[in-house]
Length: 178
Image (tube, rainbow, N blue to C red; front, side, top):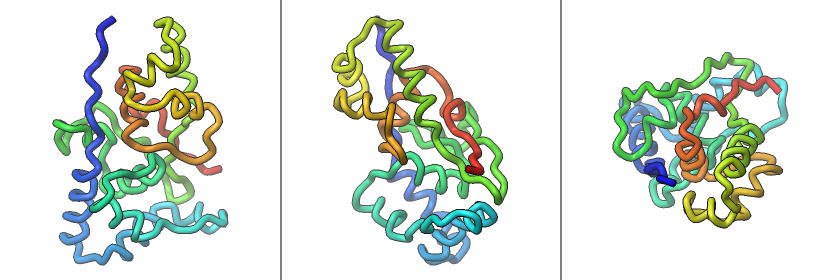
């Protein structure tokens, strides 16, 4: 069985794109975080969530990781797909497009659907969880835990799974109104 090439989700490039837009608009990181949160202003009024923190954004400069759900706030603000931040991609990569979302919605990864697609493909290929974990460069628990995860997983792992499935990220992203 030939393994697909799994390109790395480039968190430093995501940070650089955020920072470039921030500088271009003359915004502080607090103002960027406020704008990200304001994209779902109507939904935020109805929910008792805490807004995105500027440190969630700035921490990526020194610790190049982000959760899949946090990444969607940033990608929505940049109007870019996750695929456009895979190593070697360009900003105009249009293989996947984020779903439209209004002020009463927030983009969310449908992690249950992602798990079901991954598990189905794993079974069709006759693989064990440990075998798939080697391919996806993670632990078996990270994969099986996806079935019950409540909030998020690492964006890098999310995109490795999407690529292994050979599907666009948009197949697993929804505009949610709760």
